[in-house]
Length: 104
Image 1 (tube, rainbow, N blue to C red):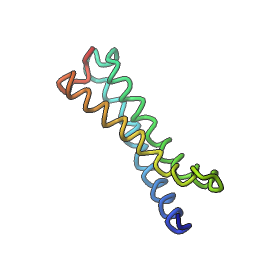
Image 2: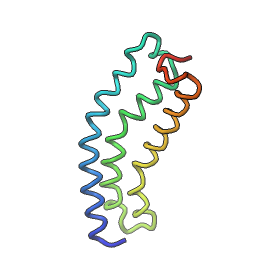
Image 3: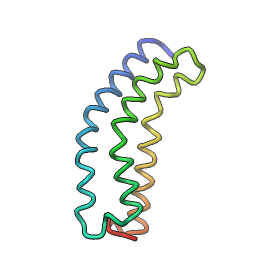
Image 4: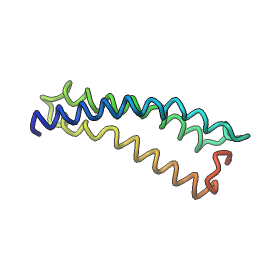
């Protein structure tokens, strides 16, 4: 991977990480529905959303830490793992809970 592309991706990931902090702070609103705090899917979705800024920042920093390793460039894809997990959880809530956060 080109060094310029790596710098652009790192800066972009860091900016997205800063923006995603707002989403992480608002993720507690998922527990407004009565009974949602006992729903395992909602709790997992909360933690996945709260961890999203961490994944963006790790995706920006870790490729530079491990740039001499063969897997270093693949660490740019780290935030996509959390996004995929969030998408799976949202789909599961839509399928099994009819879109309600208060589902057991």
